Figure 1: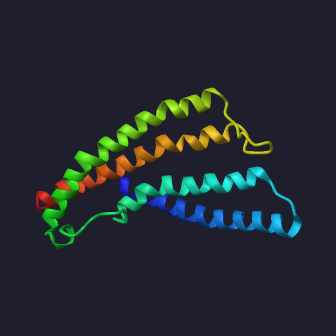
Figure 2: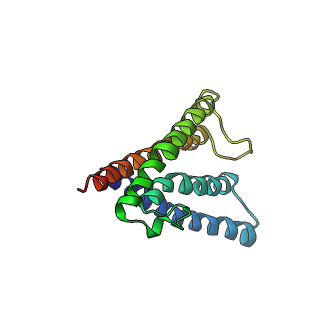
Figure 3: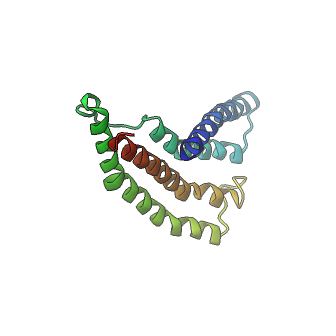
Amino acid sequence: MIERFSALLGRASAWLTLFMVLVTFIVVVMRYAFDAGLIWLQESVVWMHAFVFMVGAAYTLQQDGHVRVDIFYRKMTPKGRALVDLLGVLIFLLPLTLFLAFKAYDYVLASWGLHEASRESGGLPYPLIPLLKSILVVMPLTVALQGVSMLSRSVRILRGQ
């Protein structure tokens, strides 16, 4: 179930990347061909870029695409890798993601409370900024969920299942 959810986030992130490229193309054409621009459209590209990385993090973890120093890891047996993954999730991933979610929560709550909108005239209106900042809480939670999936897979491998 968690694996499918992470895969869904990865696909959404991939499609958003394509959409981001198209919007960037529109911004460039409007600016250089028509000497016009929309601030909200330009800001949306920055936010989409952040969204792609934040939402795609759980999928990257699922696909084992994160940065890893695997000098020893790649030579290990499947049980050895499972042990490293289990310890990595318990010692590093879960505490870090829970800390990030905890620290981001007040920041996101303040954004909602202030009815934050873009500082730029013609920029993104409320509630888009707080909605986008909410990804700061969603990202660590989705990565933690994927970590729980890795944890369960590691335990199954260590038990020989």
